[in-house]
Image 1: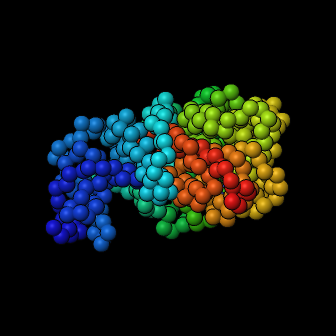
Image 2: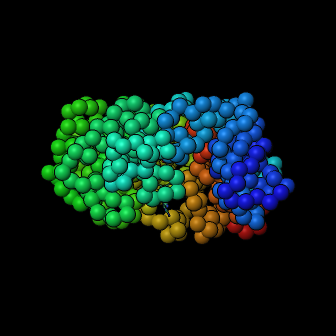
Image 3: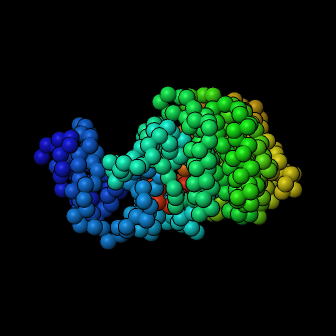
Length: 470
Ligand SMILES: C[S@@+](CC[C@H](N)C(=O)[O-])C[C@H]1O[C@@H](n2cnc3c(N)ncnc32)[C@H](O)[C@@H]1O
């Protein structure tokens, strides 16, 4: 059968692909189907046709998988934040384990690595401690809103249609954040809309209000509001900061990041503290962390505790070891392991994260950690002692191959590789497999209703390899 873009076709979904789309096969050609899961029979529209595969989107579900649910979010299917709301949670966990297994088998070409069942997170909604909402002067309307005469079109504060830079859906309630976050969001939107300062145009690059970023401390139930604007104008932002604090006493910090850059990144060239503290405090396990607006902090605080417990177990510490923590962010893993190792050194590229890491040690009375600022490609070269245990927790892109080579040259006996992207983790492990045996991998779910999964791999150096040489 020849598939054509734009045509509707009946498909049986048999598998789930990395990336969260259902897989069907038509005469051997793989079709990736958005919003479909194994066990579904769907009518789908072909949206892309290539030699290697086709892509499609569900038009209607003809027969449902027994594990299909009705998604509770009103913008489900448009905002793309949590595409798996229609998949029962137990199934989500199974698929995530399968992604890690598939990546090991097909990318790393490692067949027999034990991949354990995915560890669940405690809350499947309201779990995110950070949300970033974009402003736009041109609201993207849902199909149900098209043609509504009285609908506001020239202002939106919300989330992007996936893959687009200028299509912003107005969000009143995001189920991934706690309820109070939604109240703050709605209040912020009303304030910006009625302010004399214009909202930012994502095409014109003119306007003032750019983003609203919210951070929640799960342990203390406190909030940070970060207002991102295109220029500095305290007279415009201070009334918002003050009224937010008056209305929501749980807000302990209001920051203003100022960015004149066109890139849609909610980080300023500089920041101003408008009210309260410059940081918000949260806990992971027994440790308390101060997090500033622009520092990386795991976005599911309770899930992070589960993740770090696995990392600690895999590190197998006795109290005597030296530990090197690559991509250490605000030092959370180092501090979490600090009571079980002799010394820990964290390497990180973001200055404010290193400052937070140092302060977090003081806050937690931890004295055996130090942190070095810089790009790991350079700073790793200055590490002249081989650590007993290496922790790696890179961003989604994984490690640069020079960094992998430096690790192989260094040759620590034990490595714990924490990853938020099974594909790049598998690619990196493939580069290391001559020297290291991957003993086991534990997937951990931190992001219910998305296809994202964290995976912790335990690596042991093979006998007969010394600092990269056999
Ligand atoms: C996935 S986060 C992990 C942070 C930390 N381990 C945690 O659990 O919160 C990755 C971190 O790597 C840092 N990073 C990215 N590229 C880097 C590089 N080339 N050199 C050093 N750090 C880098 C980022 O700033 C970020 O803090």
